[in-house]
Image 1 (cartoon, rainbow, N blue to C red):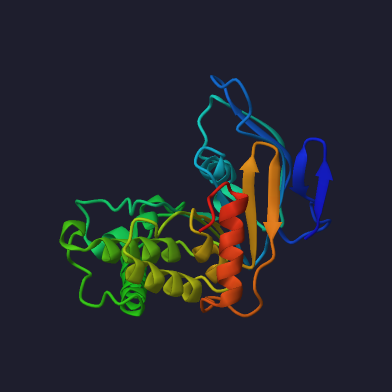
Image 2 (cartoon, helix red, strand yellow):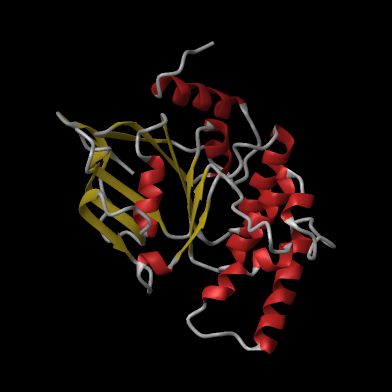
Length: 267
């Protein structure tokens, strides 16, 4: 993707006829705010690829995800267009995975994984419910949670809870997955393992990842956007090779460059 410079900032040019999600000239402002959270926002999230969005706290990253998911409150003014090439409306095509696992403490692991079935447009039969739970059990095995189906969230470690949350996201089987710093609260080893699992299990999905971690973005993404101010978004060239990528000297240099662009101090 190219970048276009103007007096109002640097922002990516919207790709014509792009397959995926295209945001054009987006502006978002809360009713009690003096200025927009972001404006003149132009982004393309390509279908079937991972895109990461980085930026300082308060730049609008989470609000951007909530906008796409249709979860913003009524006191927000939005102008601009969001085009989706998916068959169903955008809000119906999205699974959302947050930083917190958001598991229901009164439900078992298997019932948490199948939680979205409770809101199905057509009530599932007992046979369909049993089939879904079987699918969920297979998924839990793949995520290293075999034998944990009937335990409660309080009995799980933080990393296990996030794997359950990932399983719940996958069970929704939506073409778009929005991830808001889902691994940031985990220790480094668990975070790497879950990054790799997510990359494997979400293959073929359109993933938008919000993160504060440049290394995470570089390991997993096909493209990276830096939200540097309310009117400035830049793209970062991503290393070649399939994700998840091994840490290399090139990645280390890019990571340092991203930190500096976002206002961090070099070592």
